[in-house]
Length: 116
Length: 114
Image 1 (cartoon, rainbow over the protein chains, first blue to last red):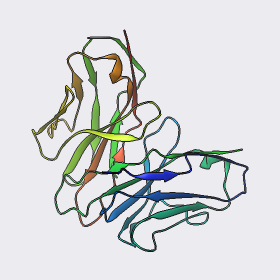
Image 2: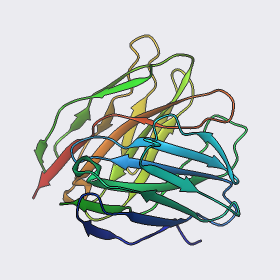
Image 3: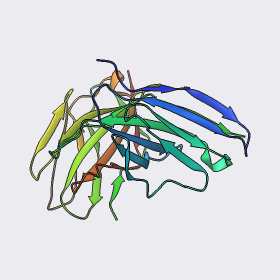
């Protein structure tokens, strides 16, 4: 089966510019996650969707970051305006709706953002 | 809040050496525990997992045992290969509702030399 797809793979922008990332989860996966991975750190959850509803966006900097998943399938994460500290790899992951404890999240290859 | 502490890297070993990467956690509730691996140029992949105390997760020769009494989930392998060179992340997920977020450690870079 196809994995989680993300684009672009790399993006370089100047501070105060806008940028958008796209993610297409594994077919049938109702839950979608965006993580931010700063160099030398582990990924940090930004937002979790279940279908097209937001479950957790407590760590999303809402003054500049936004995300949507309008039809409950693919998703877009936007940064406007970007700051230097937003330089990171943005990871998308998906999982089945889980009733058990061992639900596995499958990760895409990530988008590496450099803000100059 | 939930947190994961991993042994600082980088770790450099010779092929066929034994590996241990320490991982301890702090969590409210009763977490599930995971090890993810990130090979150069690739995305995160689940390596193994354990969902309850004394469970042992295993895959590709790697093992980790869920130790509730010491709040640990150390990753071990008896004989590493060059192909095991990667960054390893310990992670936890506390159960509850529909929030399945993973909390990750900082990662440990492993380099295996021939």
